[in-house]
Length: 591
Image (tube, rainbow, N blue to C red; front, side, top):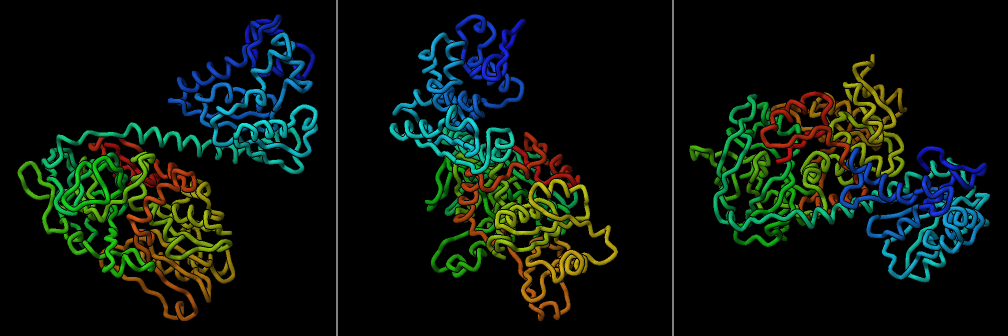
């Protein structure tokens, strides 16, 4: 808006305070107060950077409506290096040729000709660099022909090779309702391009010089689980160089998973102590052992507890039916590397066990090459870590294990990270109804943002949850149900609320050692199918990079899973406390 004392104005909606036209006025009486171009291109970005840390490092896009649409187009075209993308709603596309523009340019700049540098159609040249320019225009806009004229801009852009996407929205006029109807698509349009720009910047600056450490033992900090049910201990350890078929990585960030706590609490029959826990990490390759060809120093990787050897002799890797490669399963379960030895030693030289083939609660770790999923450097590693287990498992349970179809009904038991990933995947798959079940009612609002359509707290029911779902909420049950709790009683309930004749129930949660599942055989005889999934059926080295790319492309948002963030490996115990709090999805510790 114009600013200052005694701002000059006229009694007109298309001139004065209501229509500054995004120019720096040079004519009296406007030139002192109407510096609209400077306000928008200099003052506003500076304010957003200083107060909100928004738009830093050139990560900014611009959009506007009507006169603001004209402003967005002209500002972006005049200063292309300052804007990642541009869009507009019903913009004044060729203002030097329409009444609104002629009136404004004469009043603010002294002549229509002076307004050519603020005319988007005139500014288009063969040097225009945007991959696309998005415009939404209502077909019933009363100003469409006389004032806006988007075809003129489109034709001029076509001549110089600039792509323009114009959506003519049937039945919409010039009102703010028109903006509200389509603003989400514009936000997504800019979001994709801003993420891509940020990713390229990350890839450029995420370089480390590991030449001095390669081939040598590395001393670093790690959080050691010395005994079950005791806090982790921060210690300085030695990480040996990688041997044949192994990779040593610098861990940038680790996300806590309940599986870590399951082992720390002494419930894991394969749990060995002392060990270094952690299996959701974002890492950079520091060095590789003999024979390693798929990754090299500097590559970004996610360690995966489900390996993929890719050998033609491996019936598991060769089959599209499973991801359960057993190549290193026996040694991984014993807390050692494939050769039967460890790469970690404490300050006294005593060995420390590995965990799930990952051990990402250490500043450096050694993993098998076949456990390394090489990912795009454009993904921030503190976010990439989430694809190491929980989120990937939930997504894959829906897309791979059960192959949920459009229009299906779904029930999700347990609304933690894995459960919400199931919800997210079911929504993307096009499920028509997603019932979220949890004993913590406070989780309902967040789950609704992920995509549930209904929420049920079993504690508030007078009948078993399976009878409530298959009987009250539906007649025969849901097409697909998912247990994300690890509770064998809940697993049974999930099966028994599945649809008679074709319902599929998937077990995701890991039960405590020694627990068994049960149901009446009649439940299976009448057509229900009981399934289980590990890592969501994804083949790690092949599929995890694709998931990361889909996240970069905006198809799989993951920021909402990170509810707690800590800086420094020493705060890992604090992250564990947060994970136990009941309001934590993923606590990420950046090293």
